[in-house]
Image 1 (tube, one colour):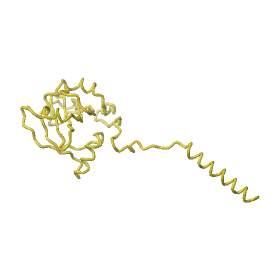
Image 2: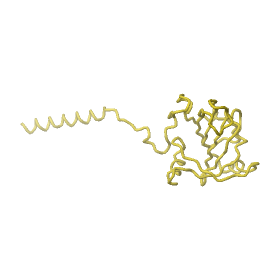
Image 3: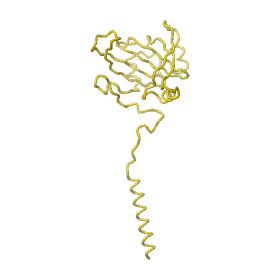
Image 4: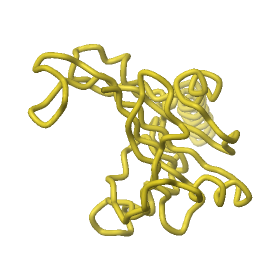
Amino acid sequence: MKFRHICASLGVFCFAILLTSCLTPQESNPDSNGLRPNINTNFNSNMGNSNANEVDDDEVALNTLVNLPFEPKESVWREEKIEANANSNQEPGETGSKLTAVLRFSENEIGSLVGGSDKAPFATELEAENWFPAELIAKGETSGDHTLKGTAYSAARFFKPPYTSGSLIRIKETDYFVLILQSK
């Protein structure tokens, strides 16, 4: 009789533990999906407005800021306010804007993007940022110094005021481009 009572009590205890573990909300790690980082993360800005540096993937909104010669297969971008520094054409205290976009184009469009520029392309590298697509972040990590190597081209065909200077960088061995534009 005692054995049955102990077994029944043990069964009720195990059922209570199982039920409690099923009803307890599981905490999820927002970075658990390592394939693509959370693109809605706010970044600190120099101007004190954290919303100015939100990452966006709205292609229609991007097309209002820059001229997109082709529809990208993938796009993610962000705008940020920048303060004038000693090397800029702006007066100290003035602010400008910087737009960084990661664009992925089809192989058919890549030739048109990199050809016909009036400026000679040059080798460059840039740091892989934590909001870039996972493929580029991984590529930066394998370089050892978190940089992406690429070739920079004129971005003139993308210019739309206020963005009137910048570069289009094709990341080596990928179909990704990083567009970096600044207002003057």
